[in-house]
Length: 61
Image (tube, rainbow, N blue to C red; front, top):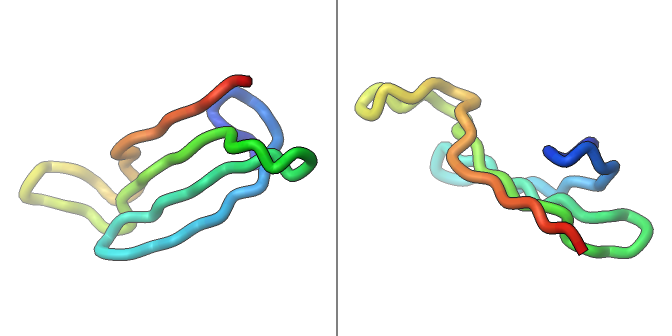
């Protein structure tokens, strides 16, 4: 996959309670490139649609 900074990486995904968390790592070095959380179901109470990005972080080393 490609992270938000355009780097190639490998994603490890866990889903629970309507949220998908994705850890993105450099497959060559094992360095963590990023972490992202997105909704897997809409949340009408907050007016948020399925697929909305809740948070993301990207690290450069």
